[in-house]
Length: 224
Image (cartoon, rainbow, N blue to C red; front, side, top):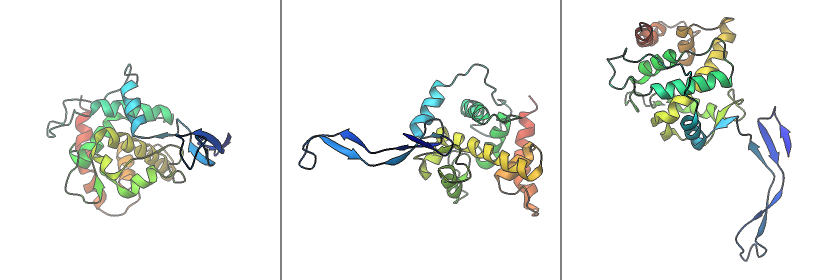
């Protein structure tokens, strides 16, 4: 097998595969054409997402603050998902300084109020309000997030926090990179959220409105 693109994919050459005998394949063998396979460890599909979460080492995890966002019905329901996936991607990308799980939690609060599918926005979906365009980027092997992508995630899967939260954390990691490039320094939590919302370099006064809920939620989490 020939490796390509910094070990993100490998070329699988033509090879025989055993199949049930039939008129088309009386020998019970067919030839599989050459194709490209994404290497394990450079992507997550639904099965891998489930496996990683179930088997992840919980010892020494940093959890987001609990009991601080009482205005939301389900504010603490997703803390384990946040803790696991923030730690996973901090280690995957060796982020320095690492992403703060309280930033992820405050982001989810400001985006959806921890509702699984808020009805107000028809262009973004799920607890993290991920758009169709962002979902496409996160699954594009040639796109800006190509060094680590997702496979086989459907738009309706964004209503499942077990899927939406790892996607959101992965996208926030990418926005951390782009914000750092634009600013010349590691972004503050507010700068990072503005980049997530596509407003970091915007001149519009909407920036302050977009940050209002995040600021309040993040400040409350940091009171612990």
